[in-house]
Image 1 (cartoon, helix red, strand yellow):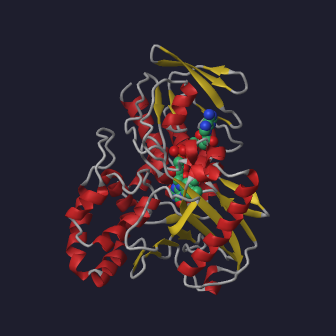
Image 2: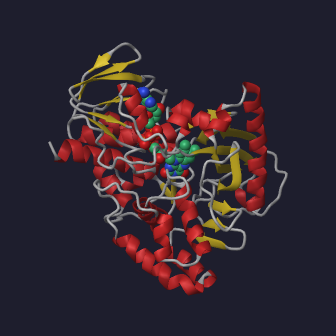
Image 3: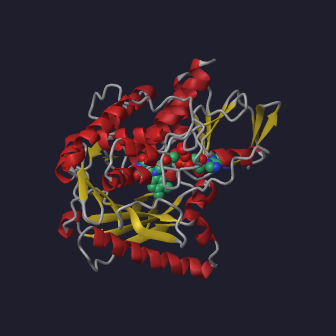
Length: 450
Ligand SMILES: Cc1cc2nc3c(=O)[nH]c(=O)nc-3n(C[C@H](O)[C@H](O)[C@H](O)COP(=O)(O)OP(=O)(O)OC[C@H]3O[C@@H](n4cnc5c(N)ncnc54)[C@H](O)[C@@H]3O)c2cc1C
């Protein structure tokens, strides 16, 4: 996504641009594929940052303007309603912020003023500045606003799962970005899923003259006096470019540069288990009306690498049919996400890996049924599962780190004159974030400063 965002922005500026993708199609962490006759989106539960047409200075409106794409082309549908599900309390929210406010004023009446104060502070924060990378602990800072620990943890849960690269915390600026993206703006999904967006971006890029080469891994980059002078492809070809934007991750880029620079290795990177099942009948036949449920079995969230392969005590359950989309639905897609341990999966033998996948497919589905309030024996028509090893294999992200390294490089600068980072490790996450990351890195390094 960030590569496509950067490529379109460069092509719009009249630059000669080539996009190199090692996989057989674009999309990366957010592609799609076919299995057992069903089309599955790899990532997409929801796009954050919903805005209605117009949208002023909101991120999604900015994205449309910067890429010169009409709002309608994204075919956005809005979520029905989502839920933060804790043992004793549920908070519902949708794309009308008043729902969340009224939920908090009913369920945590003493804290509604504090929540309003938090909202005001978050709105006033300049969270997209490219300078200043000092980590500020949200878990610590949030206490200054909200004294009730359950409310704090409930507000944190969706934001951790949808964009924190930090174990058991989230950077305050990232918290502000996600608070706006999820609570103030909300969830959306393009009709047709992620394929709609990828098709739109790819064709737009091509029409602007951009060259796309798939199945073309970059194997190394030659550095001379701090300048990236040549890009070497697996095909044996060598390319030269004035500028290079790398969307593969910081450590992954250093690996390609064969660089001696070492990123602090003590930082833990998080990965996830993701399951997808197609169940017979549309969601309403199962009495499932929520779009996304973020659940936690305890009063506090343990957003950490589990000791075993997977931690089912918290997670995300998503039903992509539960958007305001009038397309007739024959089935229900049930997607679940849980924290997972890369090393634990990696240590398994081939046979044990398959057995463990089957085990967690079932366990995760049963957990989702319980959370959705319908302990059920519905048999899936088709199902699939991704472990951290799957993420690593298909995207190249070391240890399947979906949100990359915790230390972000906001200005994309890794000490080279003409090679910059964009995407996950630059710090803007998710589909909208990744696209904006590609755009802002080109604006900063190509269009503004030169
Ligand atoms: C299971 C899952 C669920 C998700 N759900 C959502 C969601 O609901 N909503 C949302 O907004 N976001 C979601 N995300 C996150 C979102 O997908 C990412 O934040 C975003 O797509 C990252 O884009 P990127 O450009 O930074 O990186 P990537 O998507 O990682 O793109 C990097 C690209 O580089 C390619 N590449 C790697 N190495 C090389 C090489 N050597 N040579 C050439 N090409 C190479 C990869 O194949 C890949 O296509 C999800 C992610 C996952 C894994």
